[in-house]
Amino acid sequence: MKKKHKKIIQELKLEPHPEGGWFSETYRSDLILSKAALSESHSGARPASTAIYFLLTKDHPISRLHQLKSDEMFHFYDGDPLQVLLLRPNGTGSIEIVGKDIENGERPQLLIPKGTWFGAKLNNKASYVLMGCTVAPGFDFEDFTMDVSESDKKGLLEQYPDFSQMIEELISQT
Image (tube, rainbow, N blue to C red):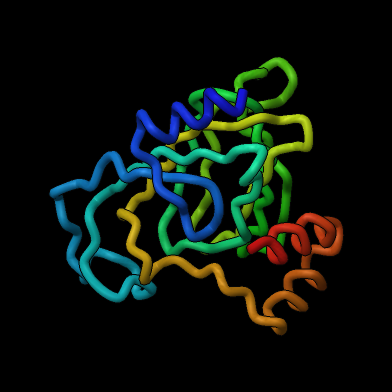
């Protein structure tokens, strides 16, 4: 299976992603939303939407815990299911499975609301997952937070104790 994900990286021209795994931007809307049209959390104008391919592999199985100022939608394309940890601003948390086995609770799409801390991982037996990620308003690295301070980490562990093991795992990966 390693051969397959290497072929995917080559064919889709994927590059290493700062949060882990591989990515390639496939779409950036030419419709620009002005700062006035966006929430105060955005520092300037943004494209209406952006999209990427995103690949995690057995060698790079983790998408580190991070947060966006925009909504993000995951779309499952190929490979194995992905466990996604969601720590929502309203204090609720969950682990959702993105995959194709709908009868067993997996979903081919997953919405991650803005302001949610989230990260993901393949299970130990998984080989790879290829997904699409669509962000609206469009992605900008200014809207991306991945560095979790010790005080933020402590707060997340206290607020979401049921998810402490996965929080630790998704923060400690480099």
